[in-house]
Length: 157
Image (tube, rainbow, N blue to C red; front, side):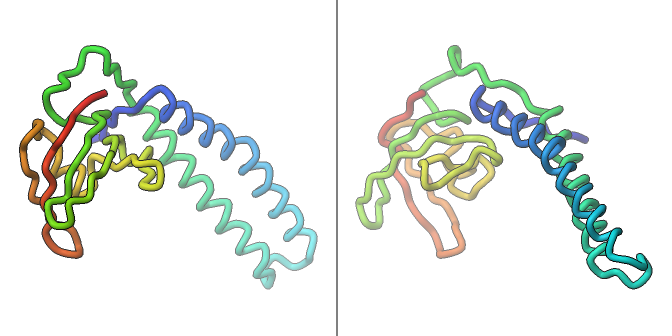
């Protein structure tokens, strides 16, 4: 069964652009690499040709998976979403109860996650632990480093 993920317009367009780039430039480069390797002689003893064929196979696999992701993607309309609790596309302000650090995150689909930009996946341990929480709730989340407790200070869009 296909997994449906929800994306912002920007995130979905980014995936479509990546797919198009792989299909056009990626395939052209793979074909050129094969052509160059083929020109180097006997294919039965040509390691460069084997490597180019493997790279081409991996490229086609990546294209196939990305086509599936884009095909099962749904555009998220957050104009009528509940802002009383944490959902995908929620902007949350959290307080780490251990060190009192205040953090701002946006919960996004896995492919849009970028910790440096403050975007965390709803499938990550922290994302999963925050889903459904409301302002004032404390989320106890198990991460590889142990247990963390976050108080939800704000939820918005």
